[in-house]
Image: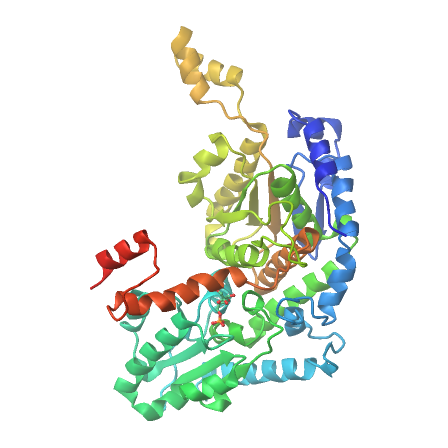
Length: 538
Ligand code: F6P
């Protein structure tokens, strides 16, 4: 049954003008009753303007949309991606101890575990020097060529887990802009570089173009014969990897039931496994598996993915806040906002429901962010005093990895907590006036100066707290967000697992290339596009 946000909107309107601090005054246990934890991951949503009645009404959405049934269908291999006729089984890639899962009557776990073993053997071989370059030298560098889901997950996780990185240096090329690959290859030695071509489809133009560039660079130094030992492929399209000249022994395959933006857990994670080692990679899978179990078994009011989803739906669909900031107080999560942009916006940025009918409400919000404290010195001004409300998701660890810099970590944590406190309480005109009066201002000028220093406060935030950003915790966090997207998608009644919205631009780019090259005249193009073509044509 389609959900309806009308009742929730009425509840929201009825509470208009209420301050979140009033909710704390009314309930001394609010910090406990509006928070939950899963295997050490703690989620606080008490600093939102949600009361118990609204929360209960949000939980009703899960029943109306039958999230539990759809969740179980996903985990058991039903073809819930019904515009592509595919199962959605990224969870199988971390189903390390679970029962087999069947797609079209065939079990998938043997292949999943065999591929994981092959990846492990390969990664160990490269890391310990048993698998070498064509000259017999150990590989010192790995270049992953991929884009979207074949880039964002591995690069985000690699950056996040730098303290665990003890293998070859990993580099990530994604953009078709030649500057990207140029700037990376120029510092590398082809003799000791392993190139991973990461593409689910092995047709993505950016990746295939960069892969050809890398091949030329490599062949110029190590010869054509070197391709078979310096190139590996991570793909579902084994026929196409062979046509590119990749040694079949170095193709790590997966199935079409792993969506690109959900693919970090299998072969697409190979650069990460090479960088941090198979044991730590397994810990990422273990963390994700723990979150899968939590998602499947925890009651909704203790279920982190459900709670993140419901606060998200409340802010976007009910309150009408169009964007959401993700603010990790963890420098190494620098690429997490970009990763979440694909995960959330490619998944839930849809305009029609499963049955093709127009959505009667907005789909997912714009997701953006930066690590704190850098964001504080850039865009937090807008978050604190801008005229639109931007719900913020803070995340922070109790410990950093740098024991000798614990004092800096303390400062980081206090900044994180101070920001959500400031957004909650704000600063009233009276408080601002007394500050300015103490500085010697009087009369109209006192009032004018004070008004600039008012913080409305009452701005909703959530905080995700973990112990330390270990591989296990990273796996938990990523799986948490995956399932949050899933729950939101089910409630909205959309297909979170296709991405038709990226196709038109791709097609037009292919058609524009001959126009830019002067081989076609661009008949039928609009005036602006033609004018820009003329300006940019070389
Ligand atoms: O941008 C569209 C998209 O299909 C993403 O969903 C995907 O992650 C990316 O392109 C890369 O695709 P592939 O792994 O097939 O090269």
